[in-house]
Length: 330
Image 1 (cartoon, rainbow, N blue to C red):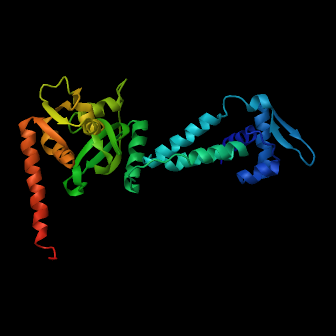
Image 2: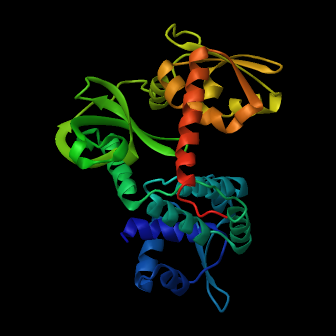
């Protein structure tokens, strides 16, 4: 580590309230004891009130008023940081190694009571997320770095199958990466389409940094762009289709939790819910989501969705019926 890193580490260790000798500090940081003395001299010169006690129980410590200054995190702040790290790591945050080192420092530079509380709270929270592979994490790191450095990327986007042979090549200005509904997306300006676009990171085949740079628009909101493209305004888009579903309220409550139907809901009354959906989702995605509810719901309109549900049901019945001839008879 650099001298600045050593000084900061010594400062954090002493701010925990523990009295430590130069040798203990050196052993903890794996540096020479002479380096410890030089760092402490520099800290004192910068105004840090470090005092030294000699004798068997001696060591360095910081005056209490300085140790209680805002740089130290209180118990609630420590808990929040540890919980945030759990969420980030389980979600596939691209800089998990650095995050882990930061949490380790937080644990290292606390006293025993604080450390016990941190460990208890960190083990009291679990997050279930689908894991991401190392390739996707590497692409997330590349996208985040390019967004920070404002560098244009050359991207091969493989579509739903991630097939490099059929992927499209484009230059892309990454404005942000977004985690939504268990998936990572990137939002920015696509030079191929000449417009803002969202891309699923798991469908990106490759990324290469170019020597071109871009300026991100002021007041840009990646969240707004993503939701606008994925979820059209149910009240303001005349091309959307009205869908009326009748069911028990507990079924309608479950439908409301779905990311698409919950957004598309425009009217709710006992036993009935009205949605506004685009025709593409209505006839391709929605039937497969509604099918598991079986006879628990009734589609009052549109008739096209009823016909599509019947078509999908017949297809599934035919698929499984074809398996019966291959099963051994009882």
